[in-house]
Image (cartoon, rainbow, N blue to C red; front, side, top):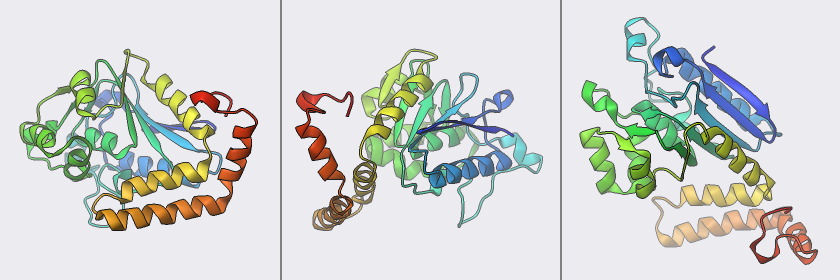
Length: 256
């Protein structure tokens, strides 16, 4: 097995564990990643997932050597993506904890996540530019949406390495932490997110994703529909009651 799962509910941590190839993903590993995130989606006790790579590397992309050995990534129009879960639309958030290289398909896995917690030594890049391997796991779609077309073209056309500092300045990295601290920080954020009223958080998240490509009127209508679902759940009543009891006042996020 080249993918491990560690459960500390409400956090569900998925680890790519193939350090001999810098956590490159072959066909079987991609399938394991997909299976892991299906398990996360279906596990009621799991509220937020964290994705990382073992031994100080997030993921170096697809395992090109495995292609010549019959373990290549699946290339099909339907079903899972070549890197595994990149076509999944989950109802719950995933946070990437990134150390070392997150390049080529590894960059695309990072882009698939909702947030990226990045160590100061991390490197992003479309390194597959050198070998004629296309971005086929959402890289040409998610990258421009995250950082803008101009900066995305810089990465896509040149393939050059992007440091953690530059990634943070561009909005690719959400937070930069010291080397060795990304998992701890990502799991801490995951636990904080898991404390919030779940229906509201999930619906706001999905509305934010779905507004891309909609005109303003349709996006506002879609947001309203999600908002109605949240209101119908009654979460806001309990939240209002908690506020009157003194919880969360003055911007306090503790003991909510």
